Length: 337
Ligand code: PLP
Ligand code: COI
Image (cartoon, rainbow, N blue to C red):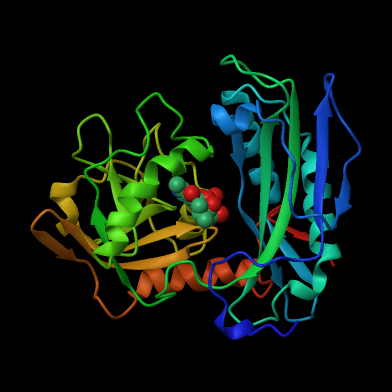
C-alpha cells in the first residue's frame, strides 16, 4: 500500500497488527498480537449498554536517525488505570501496557511516518467490559486492546490558527467523569461538536458546568493561553481531562522558556488579558486558536491567520523532544528502536 505521508488526516486506517489481552477470573492472560480487526462481543456486554469502557491516545514518533520514540507512555498507563478504577474495571499493570504499545509499534513499524513528514503513528489503547450481564454492575470479563494507524493533523489548520465556539452544552459534570478518559464524555460531545463543525468552527469550548463563566477545555484537547505579560495559563478544574501534553507544556514553559506557568481560572470575561491561545493534546499537538465565538461576541487572540511567537516556541520545544531533536527531561522518552 502506498501512503501519502505528507497529507494524512486523522482517520482510521487498518494496519496489520493489534494487541489483545483478556481478563477473566481475576487475572489478565498473556496477550498477543493479532491480525483480526474486529471483536465479537456478548450481547449483554456492559461496554455496550452502560458505557463501561475507557481509552487512551498516544503517538510514536520517527526520529531523524530512523529510530522510533514514545512520549510519556507511563502517563498514559497511569491515566488509563485512573479511568479504569472510576468505572470499576481492572487495572492494567504499567509494564504490560508499555509492552503492548511497544509490540504494536514494532509489528507495524512500516506505518510509522517518516521524520519530517508531519505524520506520526497514533496508538489507541482501549479497555472494555464484556461478557454476560444485564444489571447495572461491572462486567465479569474485560478486553484490553491496542491498535494503531498513521495520522497527520487533527484540526485542519495544523499550526495555522482556527476558530472555536463556546458551547451551551456541558460535556461532564463537576463530580462526574470529566477527569477520566471514558467514552461517555465523548458521546456527550458529539452533538455540540457537530453543531460547531456545521458553523465552520474547529470544535467547541466547554465552560465550567457549575457556573458557565470559565473556560474548561476543548472537546478533544485542553486549553492554554499566554497572557500579555507573558504567563502560560491553563484552566484548573475537576471536570477536565488532565492532559499529558498540558502538563508537559506547563513544565516546558517554566523550565525551558522561563515563563511563569500555572493552572488557574480562565474567565470568559477576561479573555482580553491573553495575547495568544491554543488547544493542546496528543491528537491536537498544539493547535493555535485564532478566535473564540461566544454568543454574539467574536474574540480574536493573536491573529486569525498567524501563530503567535510563544505558541510557536512551545510547539518547537515539545515536538523537538517528541521527535528526538531536543533533549528530553528525564523519563519522557522511550526508544522503541
Ligand atoms: N482533553 C480531552 C477531552 C481529550 O480528549 C484529550 C485527548 O487525549 C486531551 C484533553 C489531551 O490530553 P493528552 O494531552 O493527554 O492527549
Ligand atoms: C487524543 O488526543 O489522543 C484524543 O484522544 C483526542 C481525540 C481523538 C478524542
